[in-house]
Image 1 (cartoon, one colour):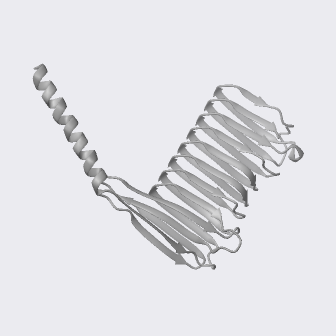
Image 2: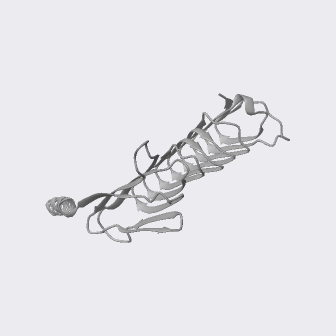
Image 3: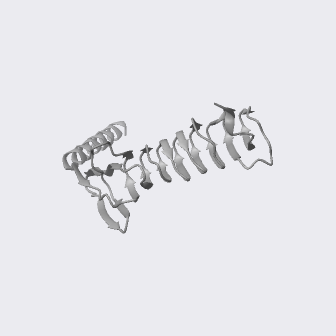
Length: 249
């Protein structure tokens, strides 16, 4: 019996090694870039798997889309089209075995509104002076140096960071991960929620008092900003397991 189990284990290991070798041999990566029309004022990008990075175009440079598509038995199905002043980019992998991913980096004019989403990957948006929405199911979301009426950063599994962000309303939510908001200006409403993770908010000293709802079921609660329940500046900071901290910069 031991001999049979050893043989079966050996066959399994060899089969597994052969499978990974096959994946390596058939994996292919394609990189490319394309110009983004100067008429674009909105970008909407949705992909199944891969990282998304959006930056503001540099002085003297033209807006561009850079991509890296990875295929192995499955291939990314990419669609790029412009409707009016909105650029739509979608990449789907579908069901099946093998690696399939698409990484994107876009450089856009500062005033371009951005809405991006990936199922598995990190999201980073920097420098945009318009509303921003960044979502992922598994990965982190980082929004930095943003000025927009509405800012949204959401993940199911991953950390959320808002840094140097100016907004009227903002949502920073995750189911598993920490939420950090710092270096922000006066605002109307801020919602920061994690189910399992710390929520750490650094509010502007000269913007209070604040109407604060700060809650945790398992963890420490620390609120040191000026509070007034009738204030028009609302802060909602919650977690089930983790610390909640609301303090002035």
